View (tube, rainbow, N blue to C red):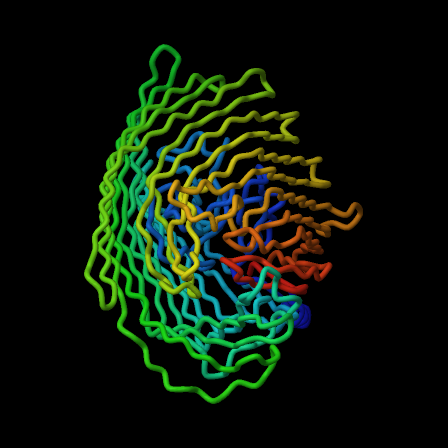
Length: 637
């Protein structure tokens, strides 16, 4: 690459966009095997993700994995550590030992190429976000020891009005002392400075607050905070003949020096009470790990496997001590706010969680024709809660859980799958706008079953059609704005996935969710709960297409369509949000210079600039982010 062309490319890249390091070859549409959820670099697609699988959050439920190993993640791996992630649910959970009713999110760590290499990602967005990330990989001892170091710095301004300056670091080192043995150590973190909170809208009546400005700073200048998260761990992988060992030990922590919830409580469609909920410094941290040993024995043409697993965690958090500040009363959205009042935080609460489990899995596989697995776990769970100004209390929940999974081939192109899974899953943490903000809820019993079929044609088209039924506690805010269990919640319905590739010319990934989410109220219910849970659409549709332009090597066009059905926005179901749809568009151009390959990607999310209110809690909304234009440039040097 000549100096002039390098400068020109760098300038073009300097007006570019995302928050994770990309690879020149990254393309989520072409990397996806189904429409259920995949993250590749800074691109993601699918019906599901870490915060929503069949209407529930696997991340909040504690169903995180790092390269297949259980980890209790207070903070998920940032783009400095992770290469991508996959949602394991339905057919993709069949080969997974110890699955979970809410699904599993499995993060892949970055991997060095085995040779010295460097890549730079420069990006910017039309809203004002700019940044740069970079990866450097090295290899030593004949490629037995590889290291990848990643850094990033950015000024963020997203579609919710949140602004911050961030610094992130990561290191992934892999050591192969001998054949079949790999030890991986990693550490990374992210710090955000001068972070301004976005706006949340609380409707006073049964209607949404009306169209409000989006992506504008709406909090006073003094309502800023600094936050951090870090994650470190070690992974062990041993494959020796008929024995397999997988294990890991992880430490995860997140915290802040203070935090603010920025609330606009509607008096009418254009006048609000502007409130800030201030919380002093808080922190959560966890130490977790898992060890699995598998013995495989081929016998009479069937591969038998027995897996013994032990896992555990210890987690503690400090939260609460909030103070409510009234800034303006019955004023327009952009009314000036007063100078900083006196901040007087209250006493904080503390939560301690200790959990351990031992599990046994038996699997049998007859080639590609038939496979099944049975598993059981004994879990010992204890949470100690020390509320501010109240007596300590303890929750114990020791439970047996089990599962059964099976998958088989009817023909060369048609297969069936089915599973029944029980679980003991976390209840998550209360949102910042709740009266018990950030309180850690205990674990609850959950269950799920599903059945479906998969068709494959010529290795280019794959269609999945399945039916599922999931039941968990219904957790949201009550009439006193306390976040907790109000009853049981059940989601059942059909999920469809189509993955089609026509050579190198085009790739299509489409998915649909046709569900029936409903609330099962306890006999003692006062009758204020409606039959529909908050924020759960009955219909979702997503279509993504990538098309390589003929005659122009390296040039491709992409597009996406996402439809979200009507949702309830209040516990009594009197407030509702209408169906909305968004369109995404993109252009990608790859070319090669003397220094290496380069990828330029121009994209637009919510290109139609659709406005919609998204319910977060009982009459609590956040607007859908406005149209976002960005340019992303990746250079491998």
